[in-house]
Image 1 (cartoon, rainbow, N blue to C red):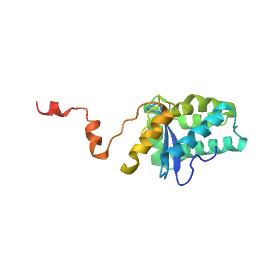
Image 2: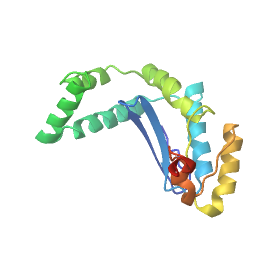
Image 3: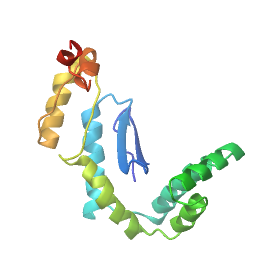
Image 4: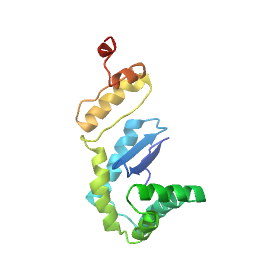
Length: 175
């Protein structure tokens, strides 16, 4: 897929398998809203069929996944830790090897199905979205996200961050 990042920006997408989550991130962005819009447009382009995966793109994606799996077993200690984690998680000691074998069989149709099922929902109103920005951009960024997502956006200043997510209300501390 082509870069989602107009101007200066970086992006990432990660599967957090144990948590059963997919995470998309933009960082080092000079214009977060434009980068978010561009990423959404690109994903929608592939999902709708306006854009298509080439074999080179699919091979590149497979290569990235392969590298990630191999990197996790690049030393004896990391290989043993990965095998232990896989066994402990009920996946089997050779889960990484099995996953690499399965990766060989992934087609462009499989990739498109996964994109529609797991990536497209990252950009709809039901997704959990968090954005950080300089204080002078908070109103514009919140308004832009509200407009793009079609749902209310909560603004939270850094000094209120911990109290906003504190599981124990302040009134309970007085008891």
